[in-house]
Each structure stands twice: as structure tokens, then as C-alpha cells.
Length: 233
Image (tube, rainbow, N blue to C red):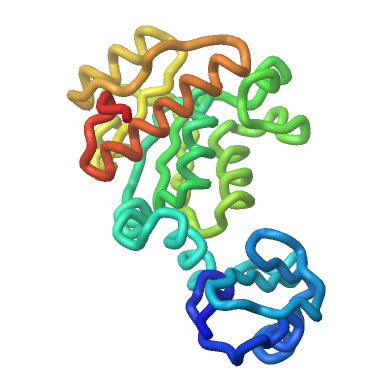
């Protein structure tokens, strides 16, 4: 019979237990999950079961990680996302949340640019931690993104984004997200890059910032997949 093991299709003997399967292909695994639920080693397997064998604290291989994301996106979608480059200008409340959403989705390369450092006042709505206070935001965010998705490539640019180097920073990005706080920076980026970013508004409280940021992240993914951001279904 056929089952899936860590998202890969395998053929196993009828009524084989998850423990026997574990001992045969990944004896070091100490967490056995069948169809989304923790399972005892004696649990018999059935046709079509989905099994995940995990060793606590072990990093998935690049192939396993790709398989997990592919299973959620379908192969064609995942290939387009993992080969995409997205620039994010400004990594405050909006930009930091957009970056995390895209890293979780599996976007292959993120270019993040900001001149600011993490301040205590940022922690109520931005994706930073107390022990990162004083760090340049782009370096702190890169650290967090790589914990979420070690396969994402993050280019962190700690500088003030000006018209003179917008093209150098973001010229090869497939999509550029404008996430600046200041109106003059927003205008500069649009004039320099020649595009309008998905920025429906800037809020100061975490729930509103999160809603707007995830609308932006969703718009990025729709554009990467060739769909208009406004065509919500």
C-alpha cells in the first residue's frame, strides 16, 4: 500500500506499524505523527496515511524542507515562489511582518533595507525581541527570518535608502514592497523605482499593522503567481 512519509510517497507492507516504519527508515526519530496526530509505535498504517517522522531539534534537509513546502503549495507554485526575489524597503511594523510572512511561505530571496535600530517603543507592533534592542533592524530581522526558514536567502542592507541607490539595491527584485513610515520616503521610492507599492495604510497598533502587512504579503504572492492583487476571491 502507498503512504506519505515526510511528504514523500512510499510503498509499505499492509498493516505495517509506524514503529516498524520508523525503525526501517529513520530509527533516530523520537516523534511519530500520523495524519496530523502523535501516534504510538504500535499504530498500524493504512492506505493513504500521511506520516511525519521527526527527531526533536533536528533540522530538515533542504530536500525535506522543499517537499514540505511543495506539498502545501503544489509543485508549480512552490517553484515560482522559491525562485523569486522580493525587496522590502523599510522593516518597521509593516516591513518586518511582510518579511516574516514571505519567509514562512518560502520566498527564496529577500532584500531588506532600513537605517533604523530596534528601540523599546518598536516592540508593541514590530517583529523584534527584547534581546535585539539596539541592533540594526535589518540584522535583527535577518536573524529571526533564518530561524523561521533557514533556506531563505536574506540580503540585509543597513542604510538610508535614497534615490541614488534604489536601483542598485532593488533593481533585480521581482517585486518591491514599500513599507516606509515617512511620506517623503514613500514618494522618493515610487518616483525612483517607477512603481506603486501595496500600502493601504499605516497603523500604530499591532492588530492593524498585522492586517495591513499581511495584505501586502498576499499582494506580493499574487503578483509572483501572475494574478492581480485586487482580484480577491
